[in-house]
Image (cartoon, rainbow, N blue to C red; front, side):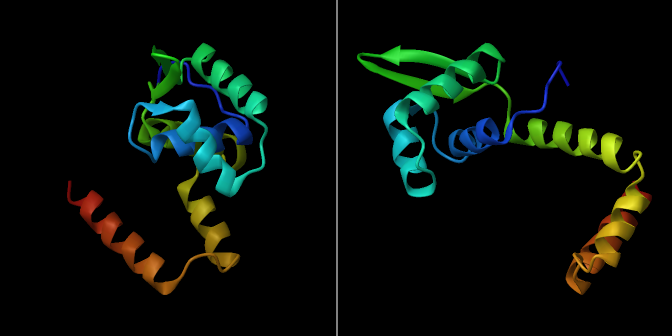
Length: 126
C-alpha cells in the first residue's frame, strides 16, 4: 500500500467517523458525531483534520463557509495495512501464532472457529 503509516489512536477514531458516514462530511457533522462519543474541543479536531489531510488520508474542500472532508484511503485498505503491520510487529507474520494466542486467551468462540474453518476450506479450494 502506498506508504501508509500507522495512525495515532485519536486520528484513527476521527477517520472512523468519516469512514462510517456519508461523504463528504462537514466539520460540523464530524463534531456532532464526536460530541456523543468524545469530549474533544473543536480546535483539537481541526488540528487532527489538518494532519490527516497532510498525511494524505483526507481530501478537504470548501462549500461556502463550510469545510468538508472525504477519505482518500478506504477503510478496508487501512485495516489491511494495520493488520499486516500488527502481524509483522507482534506475531512474526505467523497467522497460526495469532490464532493460538486468541484461542488460548479464550477470545475465539465456537462460531469464530467454525467461520475460520469454513474460510480456510474455501481458500484451500481457490
